[in-house]
Amino acid sequence: MEIEVNGVKFDWYEGNTLLDAKHVGNPRQSFFDLRRQEPFMQEVAGKKIAAELQRQLNALSNSSFERIEWRVSDAQIAQALEKYVKNLPTFRPAFETGKIVITFTP
Image (cartoon, rainbow, N blue to C red; front, side, top):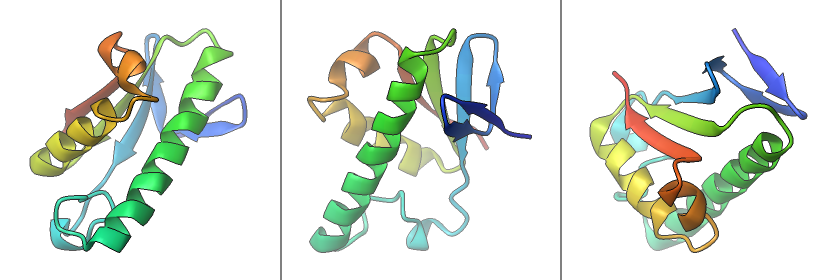
């Protein structure tokens, strides 16, 4: 199932939370695993992750939903993404106020 909010697709929602599942598959080859990539690919992946999150936050701000939750299927990658996102000045306020949540969901 899928839901579209202000032109941005999410996997689903629960209550006031928009959900986006990040299925990792093989962690060694995951685009979301910023820990193991060479510096150039870390930069490319990081920019793409930040752009996706910005689109989602823009959609959130013009909706009745209150937060975005990324559900990541690998615990270590979930931790790395959380660390990456909360260290980006652009997203830190949203992360600290609970508008962005990143969880491990097997």
